[in-house]
Amino acid sequence: QLQLVESGGGLVQPGGSLRLSCAASGFTLDYYAIGWFRQAPGKEREGVSCISSSQGNTASADSVKGRFTISRDNTKNTVYLQMNSLKPEDTAVYYCAARLGLFRGCGFREDFYNSWGQGTQVTVSS
Image (cartoon, rainbow, N blue to C red; front, side):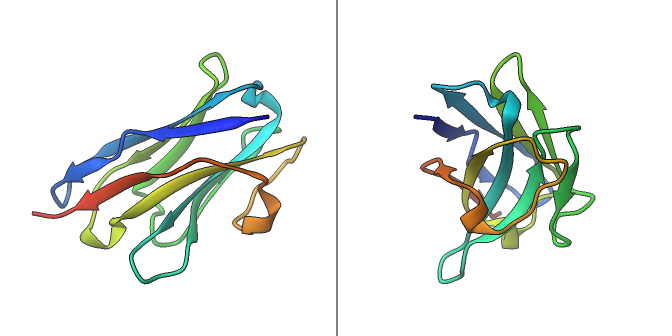
């Protein structure tokens, strides 16, 4: 059973940066597509960034393009979400999710992913 654990969340001022980590145990992440999602209070969960299992192709939501970068380090079995120029509207619980398989692309359909972490809180406030 793949287990995902997010970390790196916290309180940051507007304009600041955080790097979230999604560490896997149980299986190697080499053949998993990974997605980062977030859920703000009172709002539906939304996709933020994702990275494919094959070729490392990425995709990002328009709201974070140019500010967030997803990457993976298969040697550490970890996927990262580097978040720069953070805004108050980025405040949310951030989740990573995984799907086994060789996929050239990735997306933000929640039912595509079948393993989820417990989430990490990101708060952007002065």
